[in-house]
Length: 142
Image (cartoon, one colour):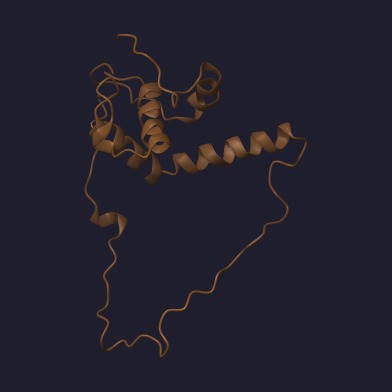
């Protein structure tokens, strides 16, 4: 793989050493990987940090569709939640606090909708799309 110039959103070696054990490994068998997991994570971070669309990923990062499919699959599998919880817990321990918080603060906001309330007669029911309705797959050999 050719060396590319780094982006400000790229992970440092120290950051990657913390994330690497939490990122799913490639499945065994099949063709060799074309893109390293670190580059896929770097591409995801590029989109999240810059606010650009997936299709606007720079050409020296992995293809946008592949990156997007990994992002979706890892979100669906709870990988991002596990990464967040692990890093948050590590930070709390480093600060001398318990890994899990003992209290939480909830805030709410009142939002005015209509003066009389919505009518079910004039509002058609919306059908939500469940996870089983979505068909997508990741080309794991990439």
